[in-house]
Image 1: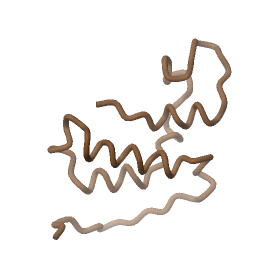
Image 2: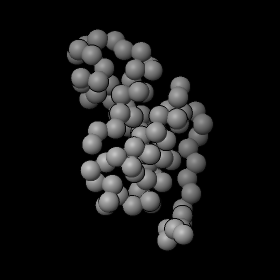
Image 3: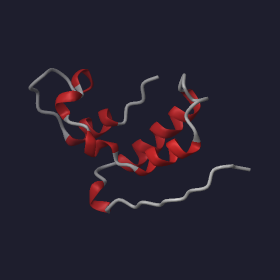
Image 4: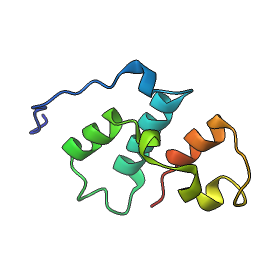
Length: 89
């Protein structure tokens, strides 16, 4: 039985989701919960919030660096979204 109760629910407008961002986010959250070196200190509330928040909206291509190729190179929307949801231990 879970001790956590969701108090606030937030639904993002569906226009915030692009390509396969929902699936990528769910996979990232599952990886963090099961594979992270910090999984013992990341509680269910944090994972729930991360799963609900479209992370790609807050990440700029310029900051993705090695995930998207060399600086100044144009990348596809899919490459950009994939990079936004890369899980790093």
